[in-house]
Length: 175
Ligand code: IMP
Image (cartoon, rainbow, N blue to C red):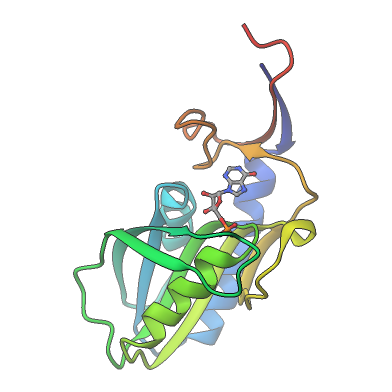
């Protein structure tokens, strides 16, 4: 296989600082509950929170959607739930990529039902070409074309999450 660097480490870090500035401005004087969605968003969450300057509580969750992506609704399987109570709290969900949008659509609904004061979504990547479930991304780092990307938390078959940059995966040259 081969990996072409698509978004460099410095480009990612620069953009994350810009997003953090927006979040700092929007939540000035407030507390924020940051919920990272595992596994893909572990690196993005860790880098983003380093630039936040309000009181922050961090937790993680893991969920997967199943059902046909062409269905208007799907089932959400929560593999690991948050331990904090988000009722009446400002919540920021941090995701790696919104692809079809199915996972975030149903995860947001699940979180809304818990009665937060506010609910926002930050996503590192968004692939509009594959989107079938419109989901509002409040803080988006990069909109990308329809390519399978890896690195900076994103995996192919559990691998490449450790890369500090985002690359385009190609199965050619595989050994
Ligand atoms: P969605 O429900 O289709 O939006 O699914 C989003 C999930 O699919 C993400 O959280 C990723 O785990 C995975 N995914 C989608 N596109 C890619 C990609 O290009 N690389 C790695 N994982 C991806």
